[in-house]
Amino acid sequence: MNFFIKHCNLDQEKTDCIIVGIFELCKLSISADYLDKCSDGYITNLIKLGDITGKIGDTLMLYNIPKVFSPRILLVGCGKKDDISRSCFKKILKSTTNVLKKTSIKNIIYSFTELNIKIYNNNIYWIIRSIVLSLKEFSYKFLKINSTTKKSINLDLITLNFFKKNDLFVGKIALKHALAIDKGITSAKNISNLPPNICNPFYLSCQAQKLAQRYKNNVLVEVVDIKQMKSLKMNAYVAVGDGAKNKPFMSIIKYSSNNVANNKVIALVGKGLTFDSGGISIKPALNMHEMKYDMCGAAAVYGTLIMASELQLPLTIIGILAGCENMPGGNSFRPGDVLTTMSGQTVEVLNTDAEGRLVLSDVLTYLERFSPNIVIDIATLTGACVTALGESVSGLFTNNEDLAFELNKASQETDDKIWRLPLFPEYQKELRSTIADFTNVGKGKAGAITAACFLENFTKKYNWAHLDIAGTAWKSNKNEGATGRPVELLCQFLLNQSNYIYS
Image 1 (cartoon, one colour):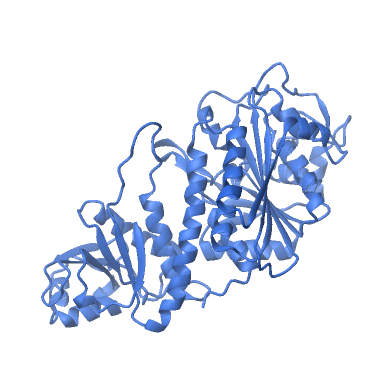
Image 2 (cartoon, rainbow, N blue to C red):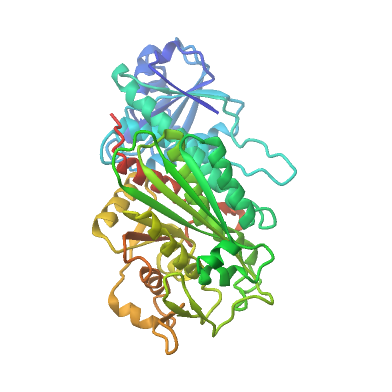
């Protein structure tokens, strides 16, 4: 699937299909109106037959339009002209792909740049980025093991039309960004969807090392094994992984461009439980196979670093993939154990299925050596977050208002929804222990919050945010698979931090 930016004379373009918009009350978009005039009102006369109303989801394929070189025009309903949100625009794009899947069309022209999408600014930029990322998402298929999968869409060449030549520069930037972000999202999905007998902690570390080979001018990778973890006194991390045959590996990805704009250090930490059985506090058998997705946080960090490397963002980023397995075994940690974390604080283990926060606690302490200004951890941490926010919204927790604002801004720009939950001191009382500094789970209420409060105890030396993606990282049932969230959100956050100019 190849994308091109072009200023087209639509009536003279030879392609399989031109896609244009029509609004409610049968009002034509600028592109559709242009083609209608070129064809002496042919489109208007067909619309009068009532086969399309302009509502979102409506489509009408027209063939052999007079005085237009392309054999097809696809009219797509865009709803109300001045009321198109990001989510509505995605539905519009989805309706086009549903039609294209049923045809032999390989080359198309999208002429949507005159649509007015309700976003902050830079309308052209966001339209182009949305088209590219949406088409990539709709066409994504994970290859079966030792098999091949047919493309869901047969598109080879997609031309994105601009009426104004002055907008081509912005369009090229948008396309460049979109392709880099898609590479990050697709990489995150691919690694998340792998079975746990392939994607184990060692495999995860190997993928990190390949980044250093691919982007050798900007990326350095260091891998810490269990022996080194023990010497670093990362006892909580070690305890979680010690019962598994596949021992833990922590991958530190150090990204820096040659034109860093400031001295700010941004750290991204991904929970990388390549399989989580729950340990001795074992999970129910039903749907346990989905616990291969407990490393989607690490996959998101991996994908985000790919995007940063592709665009050579002028930033300094530390990405950590906290690879581990949580399995029952002779060396497994137990309910009742007391662990001394790398920070020196002690934790009473009440539930071995609350393991991700133990791994992250030591990683958050380890990060202090880099003197980060911002730390964001991404984790499929709690079922309680799914209960609270469902499967469409990720949970946000932070100790810094500016960081909350920046993440919310990136969330709104990308339509990757997050919702902030509190870290009030009262919740720390839920973690009181009679034998240690605190327990690893609360008393049963506000589970997502008490998990975040646990992590907060290890983040006193920097501005920190925690994204609980337990409800948004993958889908179940017939649509099972990783979503790639929140890669685009994190990418947008980094683009904003780098002050990348869109226009």
